[in-house]
Length: 110
Picture 1 (cartoon, rainbow, N blue to C red):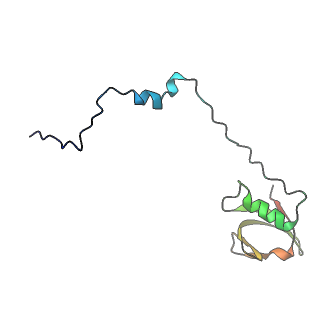
Picture 2 (spheres, helix red, strand yellow):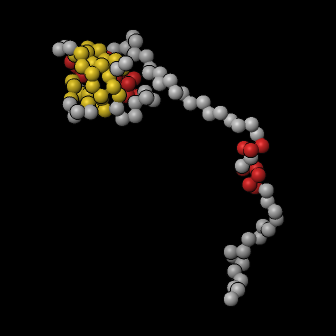
Picture 3 (cartoon, one colour):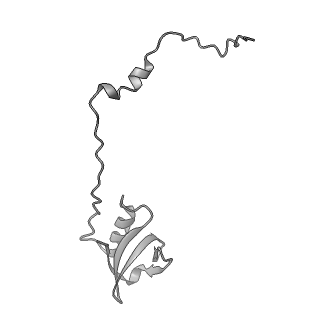
C-alpha cells in the first residue's frame, strides 16, 4: 500500500547537504567559557537623594521582585524586603506600606 505524495509535498532538494556540520561544530573548536558575573555587585547609592536611591534600587539588575534594604526612618532603622512602590509608599513583602516622605535614608542590606 505505497502511495505517492502529491507534487506539492515532494522535496525537490535531494542533494547531500552538510547543514548539520555548519550548525553544530563545537567538537572541532576549543571549548568556550561563559563568563558570568557571580559577584553580585550592587549599584552605588552614594551621593543620591532618597527618591534617586529608590529608583536605582528598582532599576538595578539585582532587583527581580524583591530587594533587602535597610531603611532609616524618623523612628529608627528597619530592615525590610521591598517588593514594589506606588506614588507615595514602598510596599514590603509583609504587605506593609512605608511612606516615602518619612524615609531619611535607604541602603542595601549587607
